[in-house]
Amino acid sequence: MEQKFVNKWVRICLFNLLLVAVLGTAMRYKIAYSLPWLPQKNVLNAHSHFAFAGWLSQILMLLLVRYLSFQKGHEAINFRKYHWLFMANLITAWAMLLSFPFFGYNLVSITFSTLSIFVSYAFALAFWKDLNRLETIGLAPAWFKMGLIWNVFSSIGPFFLAFMMMQHINHDRWYLGAIYFFLHFQYNGWFFFACMGLLMSANRDRGGISKYAFYLLSFACLPAYLLSILWAKLPSGFYSATVVAALAQFVAWGMILNQALKGQIRSLRNLKSTERILFIIAGLAGTVKFLLQAGSLHPGLAKIAFGFRPIVIAYLHLIFLGMLSMYLIAYLKHNGLVLPGSWRRSGLSIFVGGIVFQEVLLLIQGLMSMFYIPTPHINELLLLSAIIMLGGLMLLNWGMRTHAAKQAMQVS
View 1 (cartoon, rainbow, N blue to C red):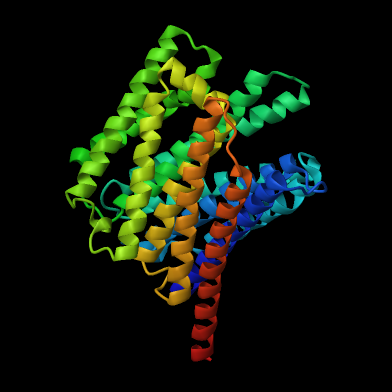
View 2: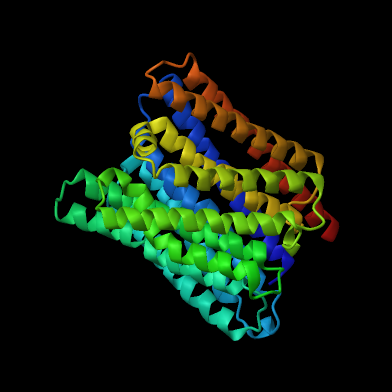
């Protein structure tokens, strides 16, 4: 796969992340001030669907295919089919971005969200077949395959929601359970396992700590879904499975961190200062995530976690921005897909600062709401954090575009 093609799609993905930030800023502005013509729920649906399909899934699909192009025997692969799959995913993501804010859940938005799922099926099948054709090393293929399995599995949630709508079933717990099902197997399945595959792609070992961590996380992912529905008053047997899953995930993450600290993960060697900071932030966010999951086993903490919306939002953004997005941007930078430059460096610094600022604010808001204490000017401050992140991404995208334009002029 040509480097020029990869660079083009990286720019598209980062532009999509910028659009995610635009929607987030618009929602924060509506909360802090007023935009009566903007339907908050519809924009929230567009924000979440586009964040998943237009940013995380799009960039992961690209990086997984890029991984294939470095493996022995890749010359036999027809990479053109991935061009069409990338474009199909982009079209469905943009269609959801444009339809949800104006129409909410209607025939258009539901059609394109369904088509997006089918595109993910097609990608999983194509990538799995090509992965089996190549002579790969290490455990990265196993991580990738498990991520694809969870991606397909997560679609049960949206299809169950569609079934409920068709049958006119109004059941709040089933509705929430279906949403959390999709979120869990996207966040902790598809996104996490694909990122881990990229992290381990330079390692050649198939055993030892890496293998045990992979097995623990793979077997724990399914019962760990129960952590998302502890409010459903699970039977004791299910609760026991949840405890085992949470502990298994925490132990596995500890194994991975131990590998990283000992320098046993080859892709984390020879890092530049900015890359190291981004990887550290992603690692810390991941550690907090697994700590919070283990802590939610306590009934009192679980009630707090699910009972206060700011805490839920803080947790989801911690994973989406602090863990996954930071890791992927660090990976792009480490692999020369985000080249050094003043605009790009400043944009990244501002973006990271905005993420940290937002998480601190959401934490304060969540803690204050637990004691029913209002937080002065919190909505205005959260809007400011969204503007900071948006500004950073604008600089990053501007730097990427100007660099690409200069390269094109030099070639011509």
